[in-house]
Amino acid sequence: MERLFLTHDIDEALLLGNEIVILSAKSHTITQRISLDSPQRECSLKDLDLMKVRGDILKQPCLA
Figure 1 (cartoon, rainbow, N blue to C red):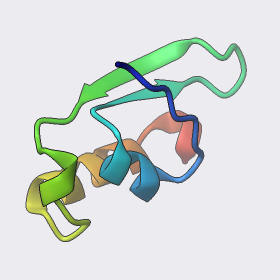
Figure 2: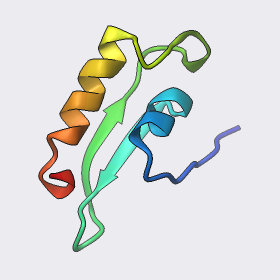
Figure 3: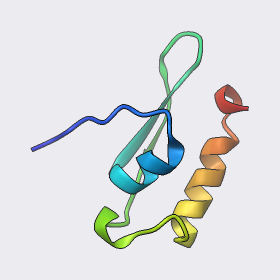
């Protein structure tokens, strides 16, 4: 079973998602897809891999 969660909260996406899709601000096209390897039940926002992904997401031009 697959579910789609739509959120504007990066931390929520990191904790709940298996994949994060970033959309452009103007054309609403996909600019990046990020697959998360960590099982969400076992991770926290202090996880170094998630912290790196979060930093990479925040560097996106559409989020700057």
